[in-house]
Image (cartoon, rainbow, N blue to C red; front, side, top):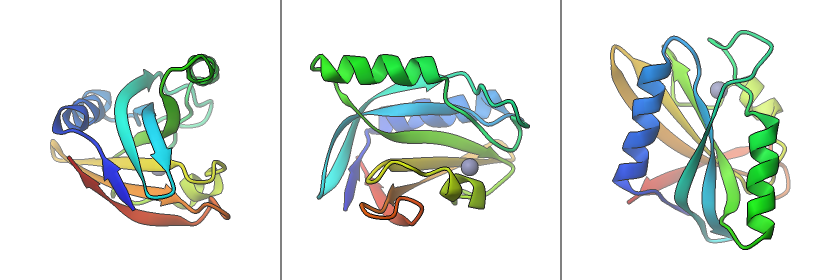
Length: 140
Ligand SMILES: [Zn+2]
């Protein structure tokens, strides 16, 4: 399982995570996916619209998601996954993240921010049970 994400896109994610501190930042990941891997080609940054504590959780703006799905149907890139940050945390899916992982095969990228340093890891939601997340190596 490979994840293609350019250094430029990764640094845009990590800069957004640093800027959003102490809040969680989030985005949809756009590109192409099949059973062998995911290629991320673009990022659709979202406001964190959670009604819960934005320092501890996130929610993608549903209108952004609808717009991206519509563009995908019209020949644009697919929505292949989701990115968010963990300020002061680890780049691992939390229990909440797993519980809210509903899209089979989605790529999850999580950027942890600690002392001004960002660290990002990728996961792919299982094709049959999306609440199981498999580590996925990010390559350029
Ligand atoms: Zn999380």
